[in-house]
Length: 283
Image: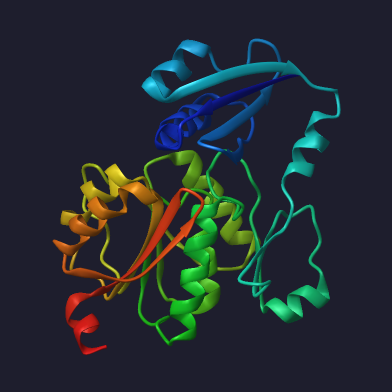
């Protein structure tokens, strides 16, 4: 079995991830480093993606590509990579299905979300996902879990599932990738929550209308989405952007009538919580 690891600059990670999701025979590992993101896949010789495809996806952001043989128990090792992730001091726990819930931790957290990694992004381990979940908890604590929520670029469905468990109804989860929608549907069933799953190309189509919008997308895509938000949401949470890119995203969303109420950073990543301008003015 072969492990193919691609190191790229953070701004190229989404393009490389999309290529791997399309071509990889199994799930994608992701880890942050100093100035890079490493994405890795496993497969038999001849099954892993071709290097030219990945070079094209990474464009000028490619740092290194490495391959290595792994032991026959690679599947167990791959599972070992995915451990439960505690959010907001354990108030919410994201875990894969093969790890049983901890009754004591569940009592303390109040929310247990099961998400199996696979051909879709989002296990709660990445900084951008964690910050979105933390902000969702804050909004829910402040009584903001009212009306519907739209998760733009749902991936594995982790944000949409957490929102449903926090009380938002209905929850619309959109993605352009069929593999992501299938993964989100399976994870929703595992959590006994209902999601309105829709295939939407956010580069070409408007985002669905909802009182709250959460979007873990790259900065260029957030800038594209901003003018096509259907009816101005009451609140929006977004991440997936580098801290250095937050200014252009804020400006684009200001054009959609949204004002930054809170900004968070984790390493080189940033997350924003925005409110509709009239609501922010009253607050």
